[in-house]
Length: 183
Image (cartoon, rainbow, N blue to C red; front, side, top):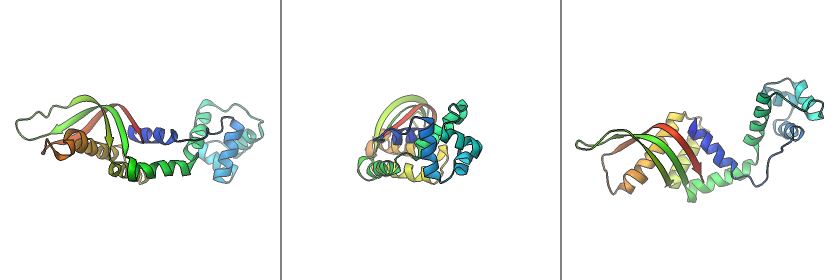
């Protein structure tokens, strides 16, 4: 889930305006987005009566887990057009920058090392990899599938230097200590 979370953080960096901060504002926004208090209640795991109490201001302090779900639901739906525009730009012209500290495994020709080792890398991947990551995320890909896309991009751009060296090298992304994406 590291890659999914990193893509979501990068999406949220694009906000041009902060989402609502007050509970009343957040619930009002969710009701406008989802259409009813019942739909909001199902989304955040409370009753429709509780949602209406939050909206009216009769209940001002939800449990911590409910408050986190409300905040996450708002941020997930906030400024979708701006998110799409930034993703489209990354997938067509800008590409993405991946910063990670992870253990990479190698399969290489005889006479070279295949010992996995931790490396810290910051690599700009071309737009084709950004598009593949966005498509995979939208299709509900697993974290392993997302890792394979990132590993292939790092393999081609960083380890093989665009096809100039290490022709038979295959790279896998194994243990991730840190992973961040910007676009």
